[in-house]
Length: 381
Image 1: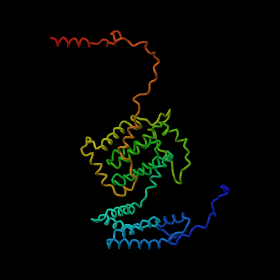
Image 2: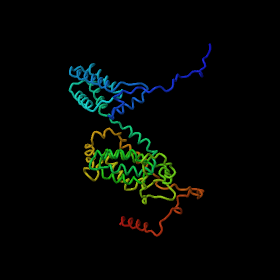
Image 3: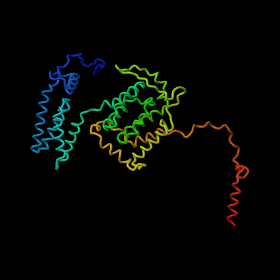
Image 4: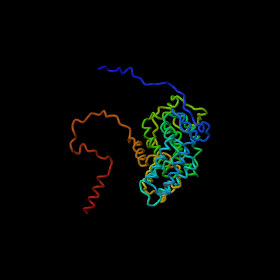
């Protein structure tokens, strides 16, 4: 039996071929949804149907869905055509705003109709989530993942960009600006922006604001267990070769920052925080556990403010649960009570002293014995 030579096997690779045909309604499109579809089409190795043809197919599917609902044919009629709509959406063709709004209204009424079968309600709920969550926040995840590679010299420009966006009179604007600020700020060298974040936090009473701040500060506390993370001398050693076009490097005065000498780390009264900031964090800890503070209404103002937030903020990534963040803050802010002492050079005693008065230390120039004797004598009398 002859064994084939495996080294002679190879894949058939005809080399680059002609790019696939792009439909005319996508080639000359100006709508942002169609431009996104055009990008998908250019990345595929095969040609796709035109958008006009696929929109006609969508209209046919929607017509069948409406007919099934009018005939009260929920299973299998409505479920079958709903699955066809799901498969159609996998092809990345856009559902324009007018049709999307009508579909959301239709599925909402099906979900809230009394007596509707549970599996039909579950299907409509999934469709509602898909139709209303078309705005993606993947770029936020990307920024939070790669921000450790952002140069510390870019902190000042980020603050100049995001801080003016903070508008305390509009709650949605405040929460969204906080998300962008904490997502992009580098976590190394926070000396220049940490006091500003605490002063801003003092003016906001919101659980949603608290949870994102606590998550960010817990990450800072864990990261700065290594003292060399925020060494000012390392800023000049990091190559600044990833500057984009038009990106500046403002250099604000930093006279209040400790510089020069041997760097021992970003340590303060409690971990990396001052005594005042740590007291404020512990107040947030008590409030998060719903322990009443001096202000009788302090436990109600936070949820009341959060109830005014718009539904668009629900699309942002959820922060870590505040109890977990508080636990991380407390654990990673612990320090020894004192510096470790060097071992003593005194010799070990040859023997343990006997229980006698000769080795018992006595207070010098004290009237303790006179006081005890006086109390004893007075008691007998």
